[in-house]
Image (cartoon, rainbow, N blue to C red):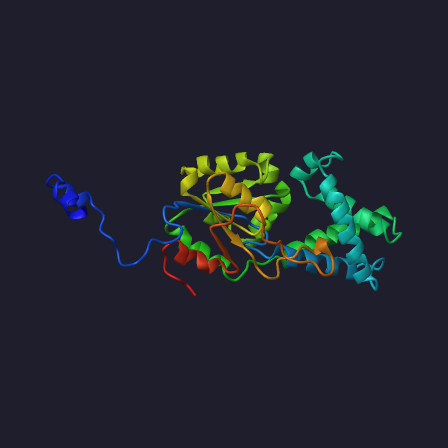
Length: 282
Ligand SMILES: [Mg+2]
């Protein structure tokens, strides 16, 4: 049947037939632009936060000697405070600057240890921000992968957080020039998982949803909204990806039970390249 059908093709139509190739299609074929999350996808933010907090607490006479206790207070205060940013009216300030909520969080953490001096609160909160930024590092797989992808794809960065904090991170890490589009929650006034963020990236990069790939470490903030926006999504699950706010015994985000699966899961960004049909760097 197939041969008969082909024999009826008009002369010249052969040129339009695609012959089967030896190598299979790459899993992420048709992708034209790749957008990354920043914290804990490209850089080790949790690790920097943990190190920054410890250095700030060790560096102040009010908390030195009781650092582990204070870390648990900070983690408990974080879990209590961050879900209340919007209901308690902190969100607008938070978008512009990390300072007000960072200081308020430290105030609530120190209050749990009956430390109430506002000067001490400010000194430790400021030291935490400083030390966290100076401890921030790219994961070793980030730079080689960005360099490779830059040759063939439009690249975007979509990061949640205050305008000043996220800009400082991008500058400190030296990755800004890789991206054709940078969307910071604090700058545009909306963040993931809002669908508008993904639409905006499509517009800025000039591709349709089916041509977009998102790479991120959070299923709920990165992967699910990307899939719902019609993008492909690769979930980066590094074994050390545990927020310090979880306190002792925290675990990485679990795979969802009844939600759509990502197109791939990896602990190493280098595996993006063969998925996209590019040469493997590993
Ligand atoms: Mg992240």
